[in-house]
Structures are given as structure tokens and as C-alpha cells.
Length: 405
Image 1 (tube, helix red, strand yellow):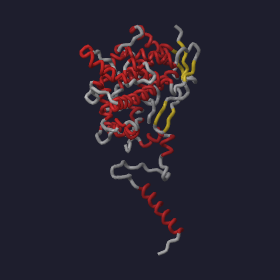
Image 2 (cartoon, one colour):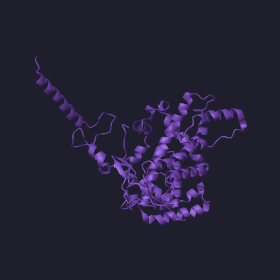
Image 3 (cartoon, one colour):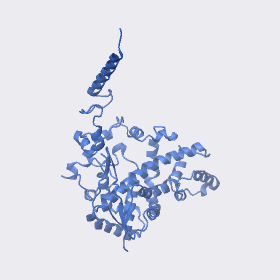
Image 4 (cartoon, helix red, strand yellow):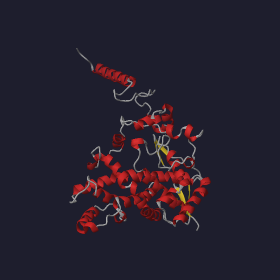
């Protein structure tokens, strides 16, 4: 039988057309996939709505089982994180799927219980960063928030992870610090005084314990620390920036929140303890509201948190409005998760670093508004930048001006 080239083209296009029709009409991509949501535009589907109108798109279909998703064993937050943020592809020591479990356990045991011991050091490092990145604002100064505020949270994290000496170095991590500690331990024996930082914790952990420091060992240690740095610095600085925008655009809240900071500052004589930080209840409630209204709308399943964070039963007839003292009135601190507040996850997927993150944001915010008047260029709340379902702090910049003593 003879086929002309024209006939072959027709057959090929007919095959493609049939396949596309079948693919569009298929209720599932495979037997283990969730059903596809019907759409009108072939191939493109919901892409445009998802990218440019994600909030309304997610609300249109809703998500009434978000709580169940976060509590079921059928979904894996670790696996989803590996897919969305594949550090294991560049960090050879992070290829083990259990690596994230070790990160979680290290934060829970090596950082969270010791937060009260870190407070004074954290404040010292914050003030160094504030003076360096923002400095004197005797005249109003517009600060670009895309990079500068990252350093505010990075320096305290460096102190806690690699120690006070290494944190003074702009490169952050001195690999030789580990070798020096092992040598000191061997020479000093019982007289060795262990530094208070995460490296010391890891050196006593069975997974990292060693008597000989090799290149592979240092790589393993640095890879592990890098994951914690990425997880902590990025998210903390992002939410701190948003909190400052929320504050700078709401002059009706300035005096009330500032007065609380002055009162506690006098009580603690300039150095916050955990007890004093816990007394910053208005600031905590304000930060909780910043986190709730941030706006972040495997195969990755994405839950519609709008149904959780903006439900009228909990947050009233206008749930998307900013309610600075809702947490205070309901006795709900910013680090506490509940069925109407999933910013840090919930159940087995609750973020282990939430106590450190909220603690650092509160301390930094406290120090900043004691030192500066802070406002947005417009004098009003700035709109967050939304790309698909992901929200980012505004790009307008913040105006800082020294407070008069």
C-alpha cells in the first residue's frame, strides 16, 4: 500500500488530535493522581488564572479538607519540599531522604530549648546589623528592602549556628573552627568549656561525631548547616519585612505598639530576656496578623489556605482586613498553630523553627521601632507582590528616620 507524504501528515495530526482529546477528557492523569479540574482552554488550562489570579482561582474551587490533608499519612511534606526545593541535587550529603528528618530533630533539640540562652547574643548581633545596614537616619532615608533586611536575620542565625567568633566573619562559616574544637577537647579534657552554638551540638550527635576532620566530614557539616540557613534566613527576613510594611502603612497603630516597646525596654534595661519578650503581647499579636494575612495562597498538592486564614466564623464578616489584636484578644501567640492558623503548618508538619523565627522577628521589630520612625512611601499599606500562589513583600521600600531622644 502506498502512502503519500500528505497522507502521513494527516495521520500524524489525527493521532495528535485524538491523543489531546483523550488527555483532556481523562478524569485522572493516572490511577494515583487527583481528578483534574475541568477547564475551557486546551493545553493551557488554568495556567493564566493560576499565575495571575491565584487567590480567586483557589477560592473558586475551595478546599474543605485542608485539615485532613495536613494530618494524613498519605501525603509527605518532606517529599514535597524535596520536589519544590531540590537541594539534594547540589548538596551530596543531603541526598538521603531522611536528611530533613535530622534537620527537624536538630532544630527541636539543639535550638528551641536553648532560645533563652541565645537572647542576649541575638540582640547584640541584631544591633550590629541594624547599624550597618540602616545606620544613621537623622534625615529620612528610603531603604530598599529587597536585600538589606536579609542581613538583619542572617547575622543572628550565624551566631547560633557557627558561634560568636565565626559570625564576625563576613564569610560566615570557618571550616577550621571544627578542627580547633576537636583539638581543644582532646587537650583540655574535662576542662573544655563547650561553646553555645549548633556546631557544638552536632559534634556530640552520633551522626556527626568524629575524631578526625576530613574534607568529606567538613562538607557534610557545611551542607547540613546550609540547609538550616536557607530555611531560616529567607523565611524570617521575608516575614520581618512584611511586618514592617504592615506597621509602616498603619499610622493608627504606631503609638500603641511603640508605647509597649518603651515600657518593656525600661523594664529590661535594654536587654530582653525570654520573660520580657513574652510580655510584648501587642507586638506578638500584630506579627501573628502579618503572618496570617501574608497571602501565600507532590506530584505536589497545594492546599487553599485562604479557606483557613480568611474564614468568617473565626475572623468576622471581613476576614481579609488586618486585625492587629485578634491574637491578643483570643490569647493566641504568633508561634501557636491551630485549625484557623496554618502559617507554620499543623500536626506532624508543624515547623520546628517557629519559636526561633517569631522570637527573632519580635526582637528585631522591637529594636527597630525603638530606634526609628518607620513608614511606607505612600503612608498607607503597600500591596504585596503576588506571583501565582506565592506572595512576596512589597517593593516600594521603607522610610526610616531616627527617633528624637
